[in-house]
Length: 388
Ligand SMILES: Cc1ncc(COP(=O)(O)O)c(C=O)c1O
Image (cartoon, rainbow, N blue to C red; front, side):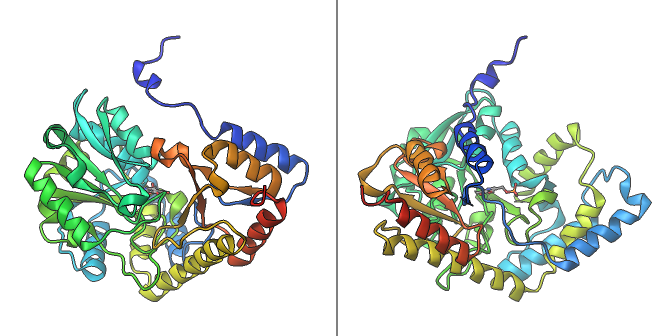
């Protein structure tokens, strides 16, 4: 059997060893605290579930949708205005089956084989997969402790920036939990202008910021609308995670090209899911803020708990992840994850799976309530891992 050379560009499943170990421990009846996968444990609201169920009962809603309904597009425009103070029109909106799928395919719209794209390191894996599917060449800009885990465009060589087609920026960040500042965005926008480069902002965590910080849209920054597009996800703000609906928003020329690509292979988003999305966009703001506070309690329980038992982990300021430097001078994140699971029953993700600059770290997803997180911290303490 012949497979395309493209397939060789994708790495092997790094999680296979972790999964195998998890299954073996589960089979032995071991208590496990799974903080590895960033899928929210909160449900979508009753209004969302009702909208989906009612729409699913109408037989006409089972036809090919063929397009985003005008009602859905208007709901997104209203939301962007109300929530972010950003005026957009329906031609600036296109749904996709999650930002994951949208980012995975956007490279096909923007790049030819051999083109350069700028990606963060550490990198949420689909950023890289999207570039590789388009046979583009990633150029990684660092997001390390030295820069507060923020992009520093001044360090990107001008000749690289000149030939890049787009730069992917995602703040609050998965995996590092860092949050963008207006100054940082200003620099990125000026850089995009200077090098005639598109900024693709992945805004998956616009509603998960801590310590009183307010999330926003990249498109609200002065000048951003001319140089950027944004992926806006319903997965984390409204827990529509498994329903797979998010949006590409911004420059009409980019959105039109994205829609054109999709129209070659796609007959449109299932209409009941479009109805559920409309209901989600009308969620009272207090509910979203209350959920964010629950993530914050988890963040506090994990960061403060680990710090108290001798593993110093500073509080991150956003996203549903905690990015922790390995304790005791260790460097091998995969080996540490296997050891942590074996000895404490705590499952997290090796930093190396997000790229070379992720090595030396692990990522915890805040997907258990604070009481369970406290038990996980206690299990780590009792394992003796921090004292050897
Ligand atoms: C940075 C980032 N982008 C995109 C996604 C996927 O979002 P969606 O569910 O909209 O595909 C995730 C999910 O964890 C994420 O962390």
